[in-house]
Image (tube, rainbow, N blue to C red; front, side):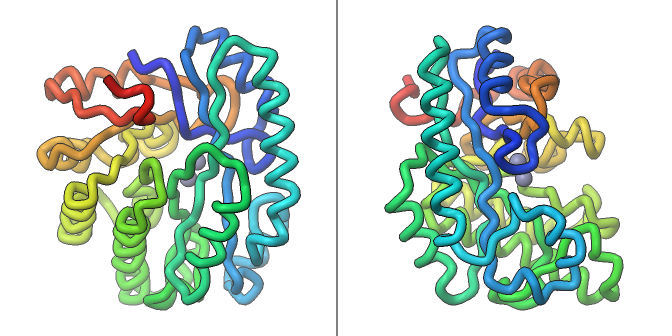
Length: 278
Ligand SMILES: [Zn+2]
Ligand SMILES: [Zn+2]
């Protein structure tokens, strides 16, 4: 059984528990490691979005530029490292980054990455993209405000952007690759070409992705769904189990179900940090 999760959140972003509570729970579970990956969402045009009415209520999560978030992230890292020193578990501090492709975003992100002392990054995209370059975004829960044709275009761009995140080579792994199924029009049998293309990009770029049990909590199947997990396995993509825990009770949530998918398929191409791999 996998005894770690690298995709978790604390009350530094939208988690319900403190880093210390999450670490204590990981110790109680007998885990070897815990990765804390709070949200890092930076987009220059948030305030122009249709969804700004809800985002502005969460100033801890949504930011206009990387400079404005640097100090609080640096403090967070320092605090978590101090706490982690008191416990007998390896704690890594990372971030779950929404990847955007508008001009200047990647440069700003890479500058931030060079400056700050984070151990790793995962990419998790949570938005729909109105333009090809992601310069205007909308919350998935607001998708229904667009006509169906526009929603389809937005979802295609979403998958394409995940592919760009993979190609960037920055991320340890890409999170919840069919999160977009939260929209009503992206079911198991929809956007099959886009999903296939994305998996091909992962295979070509040796990009890892997760089998997240958050999907079991929120959407009746793993993120991504079992069909995609099978396809990832057919393409020999490295996989890691995640819980995307936002509270202590979600750490390791239904990991045995995810392990069963691996054993049923006799699949052993698991993702680890390279210094841990055998
Ligand atoms: Zn996420
Ligand atoms: Zn997450």
